[in-house]
Length: 362
Image 1 (spheres, rainbow, N blue to C red):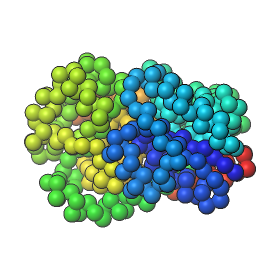
Image 2 (cartoon, one colour):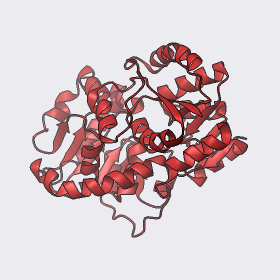
Image 3 (tube, rainbow, N blue to C red):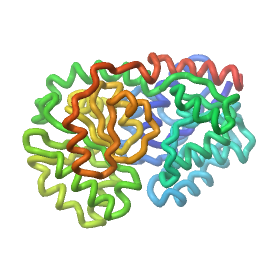
């Protein structure tokens, strides 16, 4: 079996790391990286630290609007898919890369398999939601992480294509987090951080950073929750950095960078995991980080009013506050629940994905 895998950003590198190893033990994989994340800290370092095979084809398609980037990806992927001789195209998540590869596979008549299918925030304003819905409806094999995702697809009339495999990110988390906890004892103090003594923040969603009013509200949330005793640590995504400068909001954060708000460069997966396991809580607009926080046992405050990872909210480990400073402060004062049930699988999702691909396309 020959599988053409298309990835383009950090969460997809993590997920592909769980699948590529067992896939290549038995089959042929052609790995294409679109370059959606082209900064080294958001791209190459993930291949190195997660032991993901180097891409067979690496494009340079980062930047631009969602539609412009997707259009460039479609144009570049079309001949690659046509010439690959693949039995199926494999995609992950909900990015522009996911959508572009799905559209090209459908047009070429090549079966499509979608890992992390069925996730729904029910907010069509988000490009990620539109991407995942379109991809699911174009896919022949829907590899879902949770029963909730399976139920969403059943209601959309796609139940016959569903295979529940668990969450592939859990596979990697179970490998990385123990190492992160071990190194945190020295790594954090070297950076003047104490375990449980800081808040970790990630923010990059277009809906939060592209419009000045929303970005200004995000800045106010961070200023409201940061204190010298419990500083905010923000690995700054290139998109967010650019928008802060473009909208003339940089000084409202950078002026406090030496005390309550610490802006740092993007970090690789091991450093991020180390920051995460040592944090008192995480504030994020990322779907993947919500899940990573849950797996690490770290309370999460989501800077959105919807989430695709509804289970984390239902069990009390995640609170949706949008960009409301008072709601964020209140959420951070909550005590985490006593129980943290297994929601996302047992660490064998990657092998289940390969087995499902074999049954469907082998």
